[in-house]
Image (cartoon, rainbow, N blue to C red):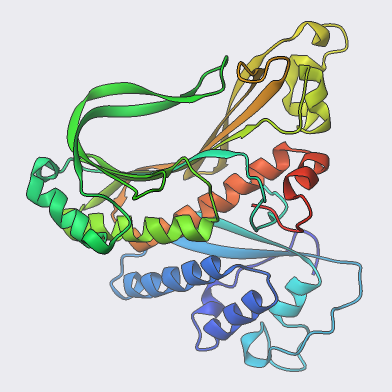
Length: 385
């Protein structure tokens, strides 16, 4: 297989052996369990939509790129019917992926352009001391005036498990839509109200820094505490989206976003130029200038990425003197992956999209730091976030 050759296996996965193929990819750790579940879910929905003649935006097409490897083929068992071809017809897809660099790519329009930005597959796992200070996922929909009714809030609370669930009873919240901003002096993440006031509800986690917001135009899940894994966050998000779907029955998704804010305070850095050992130097801007760099004390940058026609990513980064640690610097990386535009509300499909957003955000994070910082964050473990 040549470097630029693509194998689209979406149709093959719909064959009876498709689930076996996903099992093999997961067994050899070429995809994670959440990806396997997301692809199966997308396939199930696509089959229904295709039957109804309504396949279109909102679908999820998964492709695999298997870049040719010069190394000898891995000694893997034959996949038989689960592979690309019959036995004796060459290596199976699983074998090709195992001996090659695998990269999942996604888009949200069947037949549309795939993700044009190629990045190495991320390393998954949990960092012993993760720099994450905030994780937020929000899905916006058409205005639902019923959210202001206490009975609606109680139904939502019961859908989340009620007294046996993770959250306290809903609290009335008269708030505006909030924009997140990183304070360039203290590094603190603060919220700024925007737009008209909304009457809704908040449910706080019991003894944990979790928050669910139910508003007339959106539902969101966020945490500011220790982030164990995407699997744990996704489990809570699954229930939040399902509860919103059951109680409010939204018809259209207006926007879906997943945001990570990382504040890197370790290792100790005294001058902006010293970040070059830990942050990709090309992202440090004027701090790396041979003449002007020594005079730089702090900086903020804002990038907008377009990894696909239907997906955007805002990356805000800053470094500054840390007021809580005199003589030391902090670096903040704020990554917001999103899609906009009306589409049918489908909580299962939104979860599939969030999986892809998480993967891309993780790729951005790992491409923004150096191997030296990555090793420090991993500690003695061989895994990353």
